[in-house]
Image 1 (cartoon, rainbow, N blue to C red):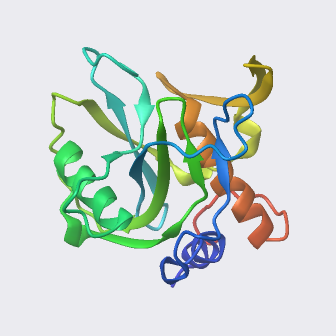
Image 2 (tube, helix red, strand yellow):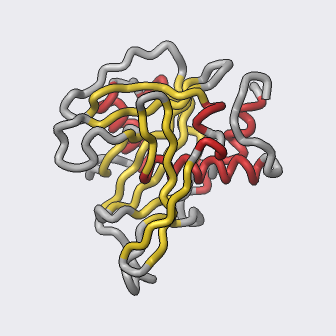
Length: 212
């Protein structure tokens, strides 16, 4: 196994450990110490398993009523017949971009994130075996694209902005990649992964490159 896969495995929370001990980040309403969103969701954080790994992302369809045109991970709300959050993430990825579940190997979790839209989202990191032919559901996804892991996991490429909502200060991260602006919850999840990689690697540069 290449060193970059080892680093990724060390950074994520093992599937067998469950989600109970994961941190909860993101939106907090005023006086919301006991806040619990009403809905749950999962997203797939999929890396193409290549010598030079790449992260798979989508751009949401422009006609959607919410988050139109934004860059996101494939994923969505849990359904009653989903046995787990992992199944939710895999099912949504298959529906949205045509990723067959047998091509994706989930390896762990990132920290949970609460959103202002009343979701608690669990990111599921997975390795995807190429080649893959993308079949985006045009009702939800405008396009599928990839970014080299050495780029998307480089903290220095992200910009940081502080915003105040309901008297609370939040950090908004963003990164420009070619014509794509990666920001919001997607960027926050990536920063969570970068921080985890830094901790696992003794704060060395987390960008995953060939031979590293």
